[in-house]
Image (cartoon, one colour):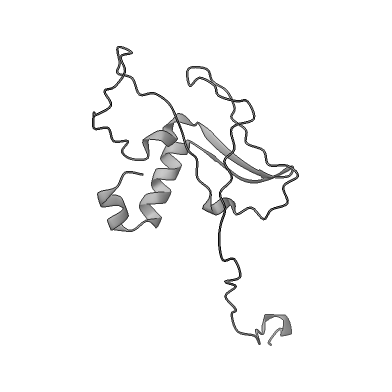
Length: 130
């Protein structure tokens, strides 16, 4: 017995109508804060006449690197964040669209590291830190 709704009569159409992207730079709603204080960082886009593409977004973290004794790291020092090091600064991540929670995960560092190990190529993991 064949269901009519399960019969696909049209082929797949790939929509390449988006020809370019523009990135929007946005600070957190709370402004700049200190990593020494536990706080929630929120980024809100309201009343934008734009189509947003969250899966192609990125998070830029700016700051000053210091040694354990609070001295500034020299400008010519070689530093690498391995195994997705910066994501360990976050305990959880939530993504809302309006008031609807779309995605949520705990232990952001571990979760995103496992995701990258499973989805990125060996070349990506071998030469670059993520």
